[in-house]
Length: 465
Image (cartoon, rainbow, N blue to C red; front, side):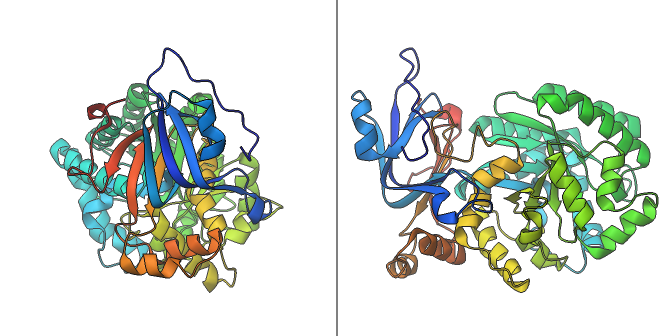
């Protein structure tokens, strides 16, 4: 192997060995901090050996196969590129019913579309329906890990975790905390009660299988100082257990002005969260379009993750994420990609990379495909502090894989013949990104999505080992 990671011995008492074969791409270094050309491994004819949902070995087929004489089941994906499952660092599954609603400004859009839609999630049947559709969209787009906002109601959290558990996907979510400045039918009726419900759901779901919990103040303007204080205390108590803090930061000018008018003692927007103990190494902040140098420094030193949500920011005209500032040597942050559905306009993380390139070009700083696909995989895992678990095709990692079809459309196949290098091919994929680009998606080694199967999506529990 090129990345100096030793294979893991097969467990004689474990499940059967399984192989996934085809052209394969995985990252081992951060191309924002290292030369891009040496940051990834590409196997023209790769093989990943899987047992019990984890990767035992990966590399060129001819190098790997001699060590596994008992390996009989190998799924061979020709005319495809096998990559780590994509990681969506910020999405609102509860906004799926309103995706594509007319934008206007962020605040007006929230009041007109978002809040009325989210108020419907006190109904468990409705929440279940939307959760089912959310996973149908994400898994068919190769996304195997998502960091997701639910909403105020317990039903919204349970619905998403339950559906995620059926697929054995890795999902981070939690009850949204919001006790002011939004309609009464969505607002937490009790500040103290909102934290008690959060603790209840955290105890139920955190580290149950592959599920992880996040404490989620929507954003500073929709929480009272007391709610932020209690949320910070809860976060600090559970930080060592890998519980997350997920919120929005510096998305739009009018949002920043509003937040600072409500918290005039704060030095900047980041300082609002910091004063309440909400900035830490498991904090993930979405957007970060208009960030002051002091804020970047603080986010970096705390080890926070940042979710770049390009299609959402373009759709609402909020601001332009400045990836060079976010990854600057003086204060580097771990940056992943977020679809931000429903302001984001697609569940496809690959499509987001095409949009991220456009945002970067508006600022005069082109974003190449190697850095983009890094953010979609290993970079996203680093932003979520899961870089030793997901985001790479390496021994010991969970076997989450996305199979990208290089012949998904006639035109894509034709266009790719003029792309000679891996970076060129990746750039074509993110720019064209047809709806049927993903051929198959593996979650913990099981093919839960197969575009060529009669029932393309199947729950993990219904599939053989």
